Amino acid sequence: MKVATWNVNSVRTRLQHVTDWLSAHEVDLLCLQETKVVDADFPRDAFTELGYETYVYGQKSYNGVALISRSPLEEVTMGFAPVVGEAIAQEFDDQKRVIAATLNGVRVVDLYVPNGSSIGSEKYDYKMRWFQVLHTYLESVLKNQSDLVVCGDFNIALDDRDIYNPEGKAKHIMSSPQEREVLTQSVLDLGLADAFRKFTSEGGYFSWWDYRAAAFRRNMGWRIDHHYVSPSVYERAIACTIDTEPRKLEKPSDHTPVVLEIRDP
Image (cartoon, rainbow, N blue to C red):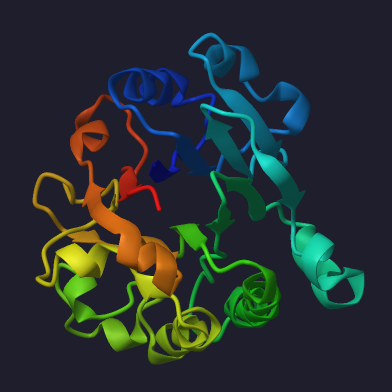
């Protein structure tokens, strides 16, 4: 089974890129982030024509997540509340950042983690608190689900290998010690592991490049799009790769797909 994650930075703007990529790559499930469209206006027909099912959780102009699947998905949930309850989810479901479903017995959680804007800001505090809710959410999921993939745009480079030049990045959003710590505590400490690092230990591999300063051409990137997987899925993982080709297109997303391949049990 192949599961891909891709922050498309507006699914309608990048629709041709996404459908072309799906036509060329046989993935079973594509997890999208930053779709930036309300559910009623999501371009479902383009995916239906390719033989895909669509499950969407969006909002106007900002955020938004979606699952594009070759087969019907089971137990689709949107937001934190269906798992942790309204009292814990509180305002964190106002922004559409979480969608989950089961495919072939594997629970897949698609996330668009808040960016945080700048260290010490109100949005940064929101990001820290959002991760606390995520921890409660994943802890609950793992009580009933041993096969788990948590993927998406995490807006955090977990260590210095994930940044083209880590000098001074301790004071930079997406790489501050507090962000790395909260990601570790909320996700990895639950027993999940970074699937990409099972196959690639060295640095220099990135999934996001700023539009400015010819960052992509100069490979001045960050690896902030991840697949974190439970031990059973980690054992079955046979590849996890970053496809940089879509980033070379005209008017691309600033992110590119990351593809996880899992063998059947």
